[in-house]
Image 1 (cartoon, one colour):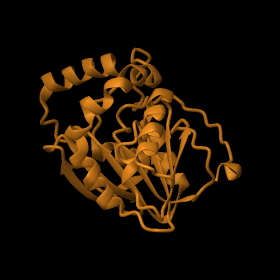
Image 2: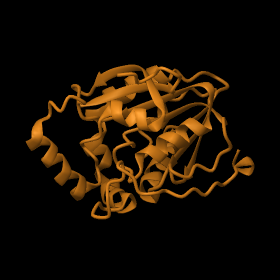
Image 3: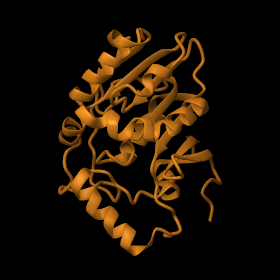
Image 4: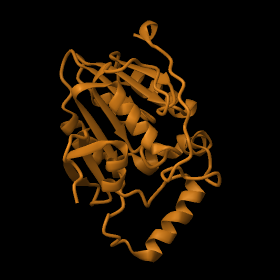
Length: 231
């Protein structure tokens, strides 16, 4: 599959969804987290991964892209008949994913180091694209979402698994301020609102499942159609 890749270079202009220069680089954050990632985010977030995989519903013969494979916690769950490419920007996280897949003898998942904002794939390459716990940890989440849409075939499945802040502001000012502090410390944007994000990304939610004690959501999306997101 790699021999057929086409590299694209895209500018990433500053916009309202970018975290800002005070946020630690993603690679630096996950270099520190890699040794303890499974301990911190393994079992506690597994409910969300299982629900997302059920919504993704991978089938034999399909081409599937996973953006942000991390240590491979989701990657071991794909049926053997799928053709899966799983990417991550963090080399230490990919090394752990590679070891996990080897231990589990998973041979149908190809791991690649790649930036989710500059996917090296042609348009409409995949039947389904899945991004687990990624959208609020990257500096430009809108660009990741647009790249997901670009490489997914028309009628294909787009699945996000992520934390999103309530659109009604029910988290309160204190929580939002705390979220801003956490963003600057860890690179995670805790104040990302689902409806506004989807609208600006050109996506519409087909279903939303609240998981992990309602801390996270599994969102199945499609490209916006005329009339979507009307007030």
